Amino acid sequence: MLMGIRYRAFPLRTDLDLMYARANPLECAHALDHREHEWEHTAPGTPRIGELYLDKAWRQLQWYFSESPPIPDELRGPVAAHSLARPGLLLLSGDVSFVGTDYGWDPYLGVVPAPYVRIAADDYATVDENDLFERGEEYRAGDGEYCRKYFVHLRDTTRRWSDEGFGALYYIG
Image (cartoon, rainbow, N blue to C red; front, side, top):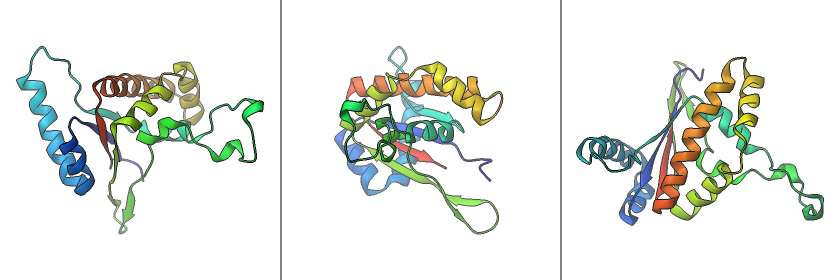
């Protein structure tokens, strides 16, 4: 059933972008998609910060970041470590809502302000790519490199967005 569900995200470059994304995320996603494609063609020589595309690897990355990061014994308290997700989940949480019986769905859209993009980017910087390769292989043989490739894109893109002070609007659908 997950045949065509993919992940895309766009940078929220301004406060106006953030307000628009909060008010009407689907309309904003379409507008940002158009803007990012235009940006790539009209601003040659500038860094390409455009969209983040994770294809179907978003699901494996979501599972990975849904798990608790290692917590040192001295920091463990009354809250069970398993109840905490990694901060990287900020840009990966959510799922489509299936409708009808003909493989239809409504997308999930998430709006992440710039300070939280930085928190997620900092978490991605702590991840060993080889761990994601192994996790991908556990999921399905041959998925390790696929998962690692898209994670590197996620890590590098969110770092650029964070460095520029951008928020993010992401779309799972």
